[in-house]
Structure formats: structure tokens, C-alpha cells
Image (tube, rainbow, N blue to C red; front, side):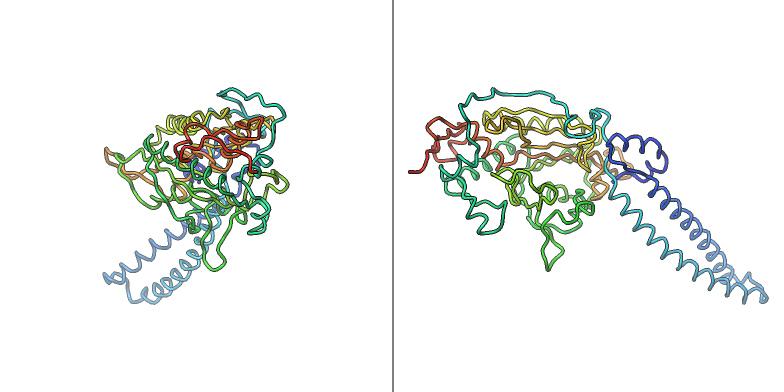
Length: 424
């Protein structure tokens, strides 16, 4: 959520920054509603002051007998008008809140300008693209290696739900444990949060109200299945005031994630890339405002290092202004190579949000040198998507005899198994 004071005092600059997103965002509605709210607030305060004066006159006996009846009537009229104004204020506050929740974050000055994903900029790449004769897709490889059972996944739920067979279940769990161990050693505190969260959590991280309908919600409770562990992790300290000495805080967590993917009909309908239920290890940071850029680089590097440990070729992409998510000031996407598709596919997204989420979730810290609590800064990134990692391993490590070699770092997590062989 953008600072209302910033909008009031620098509307033109904010408009220019929003225009970089190419989304047609306007402040006119907010400015108009805020102006009405401040006018009503000023009138309410004036009436309240007059009411206090009349009350004091009654207490001190300064009002003459001739004035008393007139003052009593005025007091009644003031009370009625204040009540009316309070209702108007509440309605305008709700409208202002809704408008502010719908506005995206302002792009960082270092973000490249552009209209869409075609204008994103490659920062660097790592690894050697494997030479594979007639590479197969992961959805062709997996069923022969007791990894996927797509048909039974649909039978158990619906399309875009997958049943992992024995090797798939073990490999998915091995990747998850490797990621959690890896990031824990790099200073991230591991948590295991609830996978059902309340509406306040979803609002705090920016999923609601703008993207209402894209998530799975319980029928009898105001609870949502988490679309990412970012939601519960970022809200761990919601409505709390931390001490400056506690920052930075690094958290990581594994959760299953659930998304309707309503806006992606027809995309990646085959395979294990775009599922309604998928597993991911998420990284979340809380830091001081002047540390955001440094923490983003460190966060992204953590995600890159796990891909390097798995020996998966990848590249880092800086998203342009037109491709940024609602919350983001700046985002790096990590894309891993998929041989059968002959292209890179996203496997991690690492973003810094400034105080955008902190204002929504009321995340603050107390400065060490005193003063009022201030909003801290938040960051998050996938560390990384487990299912997409599994798919990338199958494609990049496929052998001519139909087997798949296991990355060395995962072998200890699989009881020494170093390859998957086709079923008889």
C-alpha cells in the first residue's frame, strides 16, 4: 500500500512512477475521495471544538439564562451533524482504503522500462546447456520411471492435480529437504506455518482484494489455502513492533501451495509445470529501509546457489516495469533450462517490496536511537519451486537408455540412489 502522505504531497511524481508500469493506473479517484474526507474531517473537528466550548459554558455557568435554551438546541444540532459526518467519514475511509489497496507499488529507479515480458532484461546466465539427442519432455519421461501418474491425479481431484508415484514422491521430498537444509545453513530460520490463513494475511501480502477468486477458500470459514508460504511468513509479525536490533530477520518454510490459476487457461496444460497444487520452499526477509537492495541481491543469490548445486543451467532476468507484480518494486526471475522445450522457464521469483507490504500488514520497528516506530521493508523469493526442479532434473539429466541421473547433492537424501531406471 502506498503512503497516503506521499500521494497527497507528491501526486504528480507518483503518477509518473505509476505510468512506468503501463497499466493505466490513476490517482484521480484517490485524490478526490481524500479531498472529500479531509473536508469532512475539518468540519467535524470544527463542530467538535464548538461543542466543547458550549459544554464548558454550561460547566462554568458563563451562559446567561437567555442563551441557555439556544445553546441547548445548538448542542443537539451539533451532535446530530457530527453523527452524520462520522457516517460519511467511515464510508469515505472504506472507499479510500479500497482504492489504495488496488494501487500497485512504485517501480524502483533501477528497474528497466518496458511493456511486457518481452522487454525483460537478462542479467546473467550460468551452466552449460546439455547436448541431448531428441530430448523428451518431463511428462514423457516421468511415467516410465515411476515418477508421475497424471491420470490418477485427475481421478482423485481434477485436471492439473498430479499423483506422484514412489520415485516421484521420494525425489520431491529429497528436493524439499535439501532446500530447507541449504537455506537454514545460510542463516534462514525454518518455520512450518499453517497452510490455512485468514483474510487479513491475504490482504497483508497483496493477494486480496485485487485477485479475489484466484485462490481456494473454505466454504464454512473465512480461511484460504495458502498460494505461497510468503503469505503466512510475512504475517508472522503483523501488527507488531520489532526492535531495530532484531533486523534483519530471515525466514524460510516449505508449504504445499494452492492456486486456481484462473488467468492461465490453456497454458502448460501438460506436465508438472503449472499445477493447482504444488510444493515450494519460500524465503522471506524483514530489513531496515536502507538495506533493501543489498538484501535482494543476497536473496536472489541464495536461490541461484541451490540451482548451481543441482547443476541445472539457469539465467537471471530483471523484470521490466510492465511485467512487475502488484507488490513489487523490483523483481529478478530465475529461469531454468528445459531441453525438450528448448527454452528457459521460470523457477523462482525474487522481489523487494519496500514498505508496501509493511503498510498493509502494519509491520514496524522501533529505531535504536528512539523516535516513533517506522515501517520496515520486506522481501521474498522462491528458494525454489520443488515441482519445477523435479521436472528440470528429469529433462536435463535424461540418458539415451531412458534413465535419469540424480544430482550428487540429492543422493544422500535418497538413501544412495543415484539414478532412476525405467520400469519393466
